[in-house]
Image (tube, rainbow, N blue to C red; front, side, top):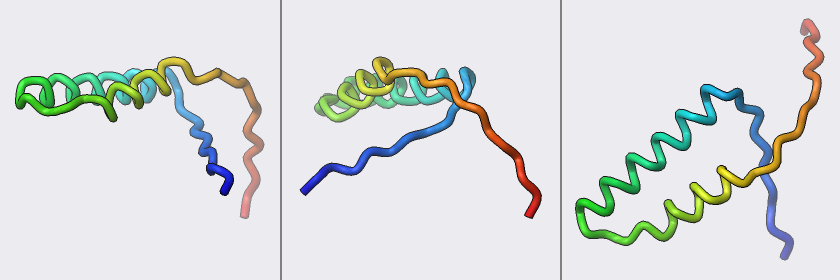
Length: 61
């Protein structure tokens, strides 16, 4: 079965909020003595995600 890919359109502010939130979660897990493997993988995926420029066309419905 083929894995689904998801694409998000986020700006610089939203990107920094996501990274900051994941880092805070990671720090909390470390303080609690729990594993951080899943959060680490998400941080790496988001940090190394390619940036693609595109145009958005606004239409009235």
